[in-house]
Length: 257
Image (cartoon, rainbow, N blue to C red; front, top):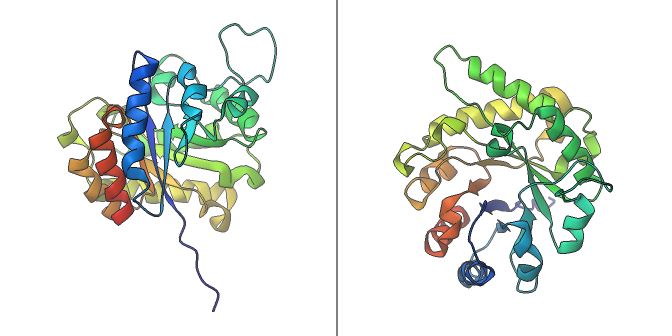
């Protein structure tokens, strides 16, 4: 009988516009590295601001680096933008696309789909963020989530699908206290729903390859319940990823699940 290879889980730290100095970013990065070498079956990714990517790449192993966004054009007169090829050259393996904070600034699913298209051509792995703004009792949020997912993946060829990680962000929970995070059982329902939507688009065999992450006020206090009962493959962590002690605890929890 062929040996089944267990796929690695994924923990992503999204630093957003933090910290304020390169020195501080290096301190946080090294603090995370101290523990990471002791865990198994978990890939750990840090997504710092653009200006820290290349300096952190020099002290990278065994972590991976990602970017928080990318532009949908490859080259040209686009002041302030960064292309997928630039990210690869800087040392990025992943890029977050469609984060709720970007969508709140006006980024549409059409723009998200363009960004994904240009990023996969450079062999970047994509962390596609989706999630509803409000949770209604009638279940309309599920239709919103389905359409957001489908619209963000418009034109995505099946051969690139394995490079897409889906990060579910319940926007209505982001920034709330850690005690307000969704329960593992609630996350499980959404995870199953996302898998069904992907299966309807690409087929069950292909869509089974996608990792699904949860990102919504993740901390050590709730990570165990969510990873054990939520049918997710890891976490997209915000502010807690800037605290090496807490972030490392999350990594350990995922590793032991």
